[in-house]
Image 1 (cartoon, one colour):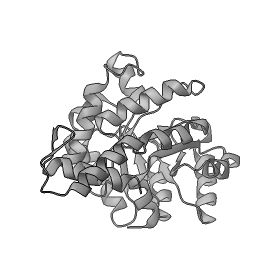
Image 2 (cartoon, rainbow, N blue to C red):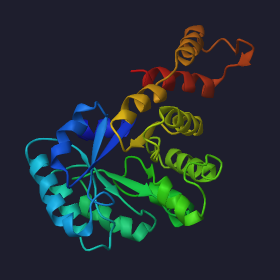
Image 3 (spheres, one colour):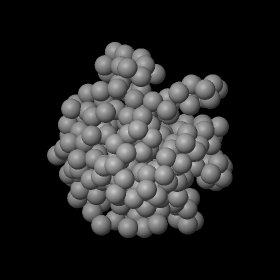
Image 4 (cartoon, helix red, strand yellow):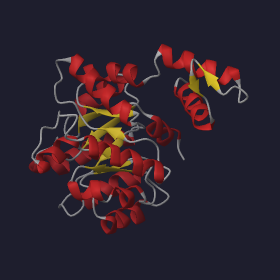
Length: 269
């Protein structure tokens, strides 16, 4: 596994940049995002798809690294997008991930060359989360909250409306041994308090990263997904006490609690 793929597995902030805006590629990297996602799908109009792919290929060919969001399988551009990403060994974000048989074809082509990040953004994808997370070569999954909410007829920024979908992705990821999933976007790019509330909600459900659509979101995402001072203090106290102590601050300490403490300190770097 490459160093970049390992970084993607642990990434807190994943910043989209349109594939048809090569002038923004280096700027996206300069934001300090854990990973940049060059987007060949939603951010690029149909007449510009082929040119965007060429821009991304030229940039990757110059030695840069990024996740590549390809166009959805079955579209006229998907095969060429996938071939380009695989040619550079870059992780591939697969939109509309819901059909295990289609994902298996993508996985077969990418085998040994590119890691996969299925983007789950439909009701069918949520209900097949266990199968999606079992995709060969997948390292983690991401939530496409805006498209999913549109299909469900709910507000994409309503925490309650998408709580089931989020929890299902977390549970399936754990069951299949993947890294924790990546939460979807916050479309409000001006109010960082809204962003912080979205992150805190996703974090409580078990997400450890978030898709970003604006550079201003990157630092907030990195900060809010990091363990808090009180969490670090609690984790150190639990581990310092050792396995012989069964109660700390009035709360029972057993093996799962010890494991949580270890994960907190590991996430703190």
